Length: 264
Image (tube, rainbow, N blue to C red; front, side, top):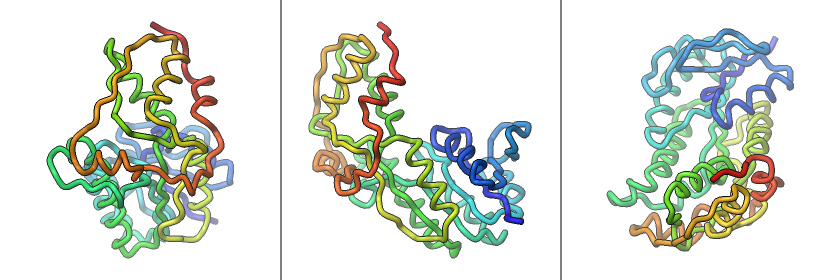
């Protein structure tokens, strides 16, 4: 009998897609959640928090593979450290991590850099924690999800003037496709840092914003402003892109057609 697979962040944007795919593959799945859940669809929920380490010892008990999807705007290295501290002595044999394209190319060296791009530094630090943990590991770096772009543009559109990051491009990827790749990696052998996964097309932020405004029926004045700092400069140079790894299939336009609804 195979051991269960633990998914952290199993109720989030990515994790909630990973869980049913693992179940469809015939695997027993355990989901780590900060709030209590009863079992559902053959999934076991355990209470714990990677931010504090609470409940992790029990969560990893008897687990062979951990798919670490729990992430936030900051503190990902602390989450990885807490997870590793519990997983290593428990004998976990494979730790699969989702990271972000460009974490090794976006320099976060100043207060301005940290304010806007601290997430990249935290993700890169988490990668190192996992790679140095002694646990066999696999890390996949993906570009930004369509959902993240939609949320970001929605926040920007709350103002009559929509402030865009000048000179910045994105290569959004479908979260379902990333979930399928993560499951493939989780069911395989530890592979270290695997090739990046990016969406099928690179867009300027203006192109993304125009598509968003058209799909939602909103009218906004669009204004681009260049952000200061070395990290923003690297972003404008395309450090967050992977055009050579445009393996995703679902486009931003296809995503918008299904997700966005007219509103004013």
